[in-house]
Image (cartoon, rainbow, N blue to C red; front, top):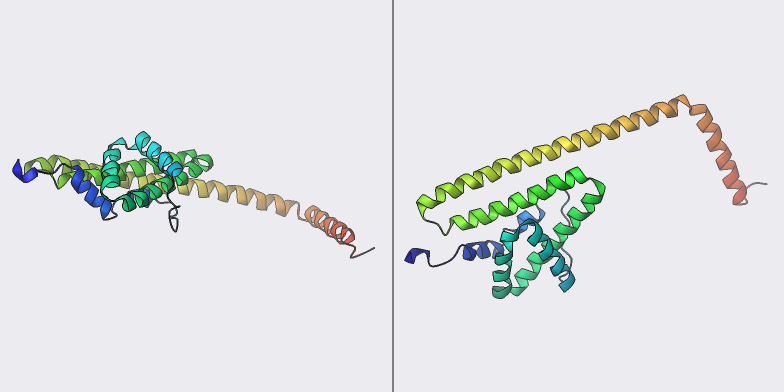
Length: 195
């Protein structure tokens, strides 16, 4: 027992200190933002609410980091807030993708916590947790493939709609030309360019 004098939180805090949890905060298939927003108490409350709701096992790690390295804590919380905002925006645009991306974030976070936990375990105990990490890796690949499939379906739907619009425009081309001509004449009159 003497060789395991630290809890599993110590290596996880070390991972956070190295910035490795930032991958879980921003490693989506979606766009990465340039820089997280500035830290504020309101953003901290929103980020912690998000973590409590979706990855409560991360809360003790964040509390430990807050005590040991407040500046790094603020950076991590700002990145978590950014993730929360990105997902919230996505939820309004595409509920299915939101659910997939949220699952990616939760699985990546769980994976990083499991990997950090491995450092504090005896060799025989590590095997069980290695299998869990491998299961998480498999789930992440499955989720990424589902996101790609959803994107393909979305693009195919948009392409179909664009083709339909083009076909209608082709069929009504002469009417559209007359309408556009009339609008151009009206605009020129409105601007005093013709009498």
